[in-house]
Image 1 (spheres, rainbow, N blue to C red):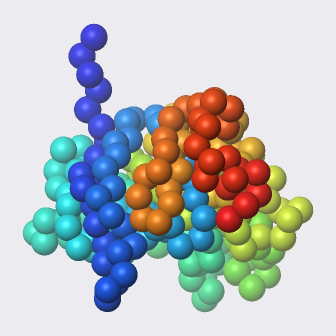
Image 2: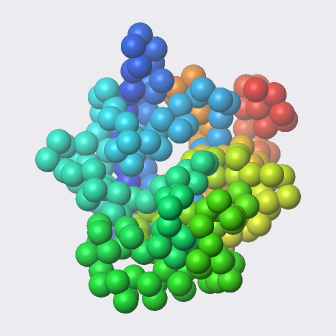
Image 3: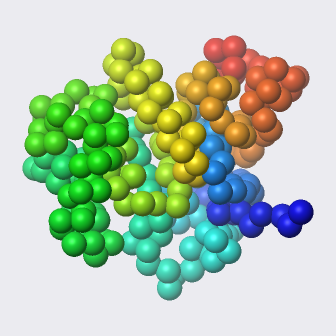
Length: 246
């Protein structure tokens, strides 16, 4: 059986801020349809890693291959990367002067070059699919945190990306909103969209991930299937983190 080519491959990624090493020689690969979940304590480099993949940060060294092409090459435009590698942020990052529908339309028109009529149709369908069909013309100030995150997810889906990055998408939500967003993300994973998720939600990692990475102090300290990470790995640092330690 021929080995599948990774959608994303990181090779020896390092990131330095001043004298501090945030990422140290990180290598990993993600295949089509994977749901890779990244766990780790605060400050371990998880979010920085996502931001490097999306070109919001530029690594100090290493390569990031997307379908075999190094997207860190200066000749590759950030907009080209973000067309196909979308990101859902913990703080939503919606345009406050636009309603939910327009937040999901504008990127399609301006970045992808879709005709407005088509973009509206796609955005409406995705907003309906995330449970926001009755809030199409609500601006962010009129929405709860959970509703804003649903709009942000619909916006990402509307760009028809190859990969969606989720950066702690439930961390800014009230507790009662969290499960609804996790259920929505599970549905997206089950649809076959490739996902890389940074989260502290252990149940999501255990039940939905195809592979789990545990980061600590800028390196991948452990990785494997959810069964291995949650049940079989005997690493003391990992066990302490999973059991509620930091």
